[in-house]
Structures are given as C-alpha cells and as structure tokens.
Amino acid sequence: MILVTLGTQDKKFTRLLSEIDSLKEKGIIKDEIVVQAGYSSDYKSDNMQILDLIPKDEFDKLIKDCDYLITHGGVGAILTGLRYKKKVIAVPRLKEYKEHVNNHQLQIINNFNLEGYIIGINSVSELEKAIQKLDNFKPKPYKSNKDKALSIIKELIDK
Image (cartoon, rainbow, N blue to C red; front, side):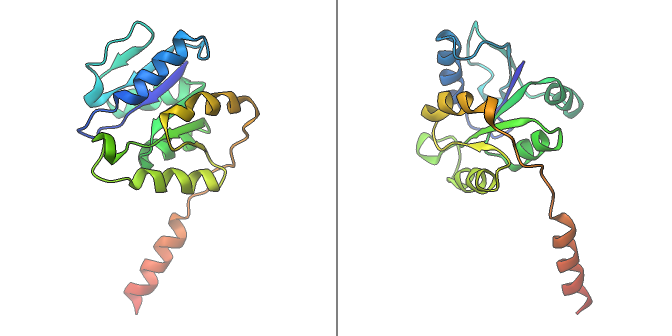
C-alpha cells in the first residue's frame, strides 16, 4: 500500500492527486493507494481511497503499514515517514498554484534530499521518475540533531 499525505494546510493540492491518478491509470503505480487528503478530500478518483483529516494514531498506523510514502513537503510528514524507516518521496506545494503562501517546501525537500534521507522532487511531473528510483533507493538513516539544538539553547540561557 502507498500512503499519500497532503497535510493539514487549508489549501488544495489536487495537482499531486491528479498525477498519481494518471500514473495509476498508466500502470506505473500498481499498489493500493490511500490518501490523507485534508482540504483536497473532495477530489474524486476510482484509483485511490481518499480520506479527510485523520487522527494521529490512525495516521501513524497507515505510515507503519505502507510500503512507501508520497508526501507534501511538510517537515512533520517527512519526519514521521523517516521515524518509521519508510522510503519517502516528497513533492512541494507551490505558491504559484496557490497551494501555499510561499515556496519554503522546496527548501525543506532539497535539504532532506541532499542529505540522502528522501527522494525529493521539485514538480509533480518528476513523480514517475522518483517512483522508478524507489527499488534502488537506500535512504540514509535519519538522526535528529535536536540534542545539539537544545544544548545550544541551554548554553545561551546559561549565559
């Protein structure tokens, strides 16, 4: 099963759903597709099970059970996928399509991609190539640098 997550942003991200629909129709995607669609839950498809916003425990179970994750470029969704050691393809919501207020998801995805944690793409048109890379993709195990950030904050407070 493939889990697609669009996050909780109050803007639609149907461009991604449309591309996934197309790839399913072409036979590129063969697996069952479950979508946490949020504000895009009115998208109609015979190829995907589309869910609205779902509780965190249900979301976590879907991630645990999925073969891989296709997600928007939100840090929370990416980190959740990495925490469960899933292969992650991240696709940015873009300002030009009114999917977000700016293009910060490009930067987030680029950083995770450069570190080797995910397959990051800049456009939905790159999704087919990203899916074809999955079999050979070995994600770098994610290690949070939270402890370093906390020690810097503690040091600043102590001063």
